[in-house]
Length: 131
Image 1 (cartoon, rainbow, N blue to C red):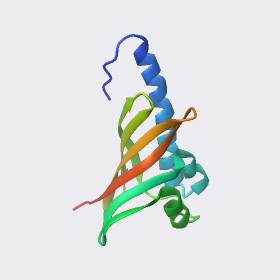
Image 2: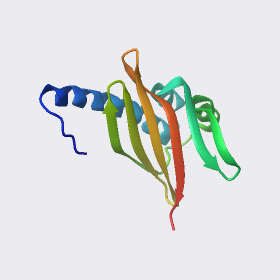
Image 3: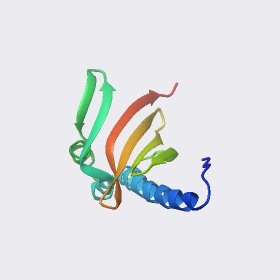
């Protein structure tokens, strides 16, 4: 990741970057380990999730979706990575990649710093088939 920032701005931006990364890892690690309690630390309670399914456009509360979808069980066999983080003031955007054997999820996360904590307020994703 390339940062071009001068002086003390770099330190402040770096601190925010690590706080955002911590939030993103709650999401990634919670999903990998089927741990809803960890995953929910990443999201604002009113966070939305938006995507295109076979039935068309879908929009729902992200925490409701994950609470209904995560079941206890063995760790998921997947690789996760944070591709990029872009921060401006108290708003940020992150791009994530979650790799499974036959497909990837590409997640675009919008985050806001709310009462001193970075929270995901919107998740938009694409499911990419691997040939």
